[in-house]
Image (cartoon, rainbow, N blue to C red; front, side, top):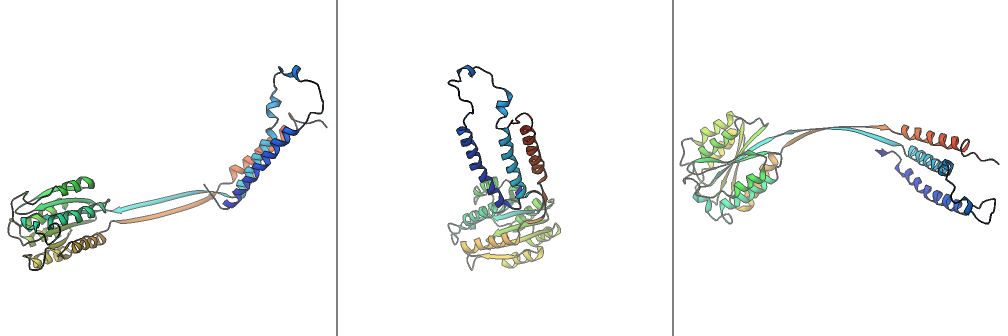
Length: 309
């Protein structure tokens, strides 16, 4: 509950000195009939009138409090918010051939990728993300999951030499596409990182790109390594162009970080939010209480607690 005129609620503080004045006044009141001792009345039971003696004052204070709340205009708030999320499924396809141990990125290409990729995963809590690794062949290190801590743990365990050496880009892309082909997500993305050219595997990279396109998968390709390295940039560019993605070249750690930040911005999860707010006047319960308090006070003063002049 909120109030249209909340500053009027400060008037409730005025009730404190009123209550204090009443208490002091009652303590100072003296009986009209003076007697030497009240010992004879000590064992007399208290009647219900004794317990109702202060009821009129209590009711009057409550009535004032209800009136102040009415003046402050209590408001009820009714709201509805509908959130719809457009999910994004992402598979990172990583080259783990022996050349990924080169130290033109620090401490080496593979470790630089693992650090950046882990941060990328943690920044996307709403997405399903998976990991495929490839060298001479390929396999799924982690299927699509929202358990990102488990994914990061599996990512940290990736090492060169886990499988036969070589660079089977086509296989790495095809395996990643297989992880996404049955996805119901609105957007399906592969981030493929390699530092070489295709020299192994039974699936040609461009054929794998056509398969990815067929399943509506967009591929971002990243060539990692310094100038003069044996990277087939033409093929990586064609893969990206075929699937509606983009090609990037990472020659140092900062550039690799910038690439993942750019992809992160291009592939943001989308939220559609509709909000509805309605406020209603809620003074009526307090108005009823006000009338009840005043009516009870009047009845007590003119019946049970009526004073004879």
